[in-house]
Image (tube, rainbow, N blue to C red):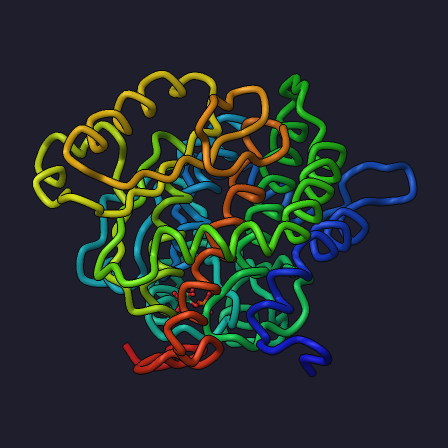
Length: 357
Ligand code: F6R
């Protein structure tokens, strides 16, 4: 039930900080250690490479999962779009572990990969919001996202839940392998949840940004470097699927290799600047598009912000900025769609779960 909310999407955006707190509770034991199925821990420890398989928003969460697992647990990770994998299978390592990420657990493209890799005898772990779903039943192991039912077609809280569970899984694996980590996932996720909650209280400001930057535009670009690039991909998917504005996300440094030709007078460019190591270069990219007439909107993080930034998110650990920086993008997309009288919860041509290949 959406209660007093006009749309499920808005309700689900608001639920995100509570979902993260729920995940912290569910994945913690009474000694404040990570609680995880021992078979999953063993499978993660034993593999020599992880193949993440997913579609759409879940694929975008997978791109960030790769960052967590490689940086924290030191295991190489490949991320694949499910629909491409079946007929374009890469050379597999000796001890692969397949990690399926799916809100619904019913996505046909992912299911067909699972059938294929099971025939080859490889183990699979599914991260899903629906524990009884097909991808969950047919995999060897399941991790539950605990996001509660997601009704709006555009995925919001499942995405942030996927990232939180992936971060916990990465840290658990690192510890199981005896790696020393300074990163305390439960504490940092708690801080991120508070930051997310603060942002859901800034709806008026974000609605105003949507009104100012996206009122009649046909297109919009998202730029960022490193993890900000991946969040930009998700921001562009949200915007296009519910507002029908043609939106694309690009790596900041890749712009000058072609895409910059599309920038005209007034083209909106949303830039993310939450990472210290690329703050200088992404701001350089913003100057490049502004010099071609772009109407740029910078979303930065406290501590890295500069005068003129349109929106500043609270400071969180650099690995977890995606959980927080996606909130303004979700809300800007929501309001842009609303201002265009689009059917926010049920965009045209789309179904909540895609059960055909
Ligand atoms: C985007 C969206 C889709 C899904 C994709 C995968 O907002 O909802 O891109 O993310 O169809 O669905 P699941 O995660 O159920 O496998």
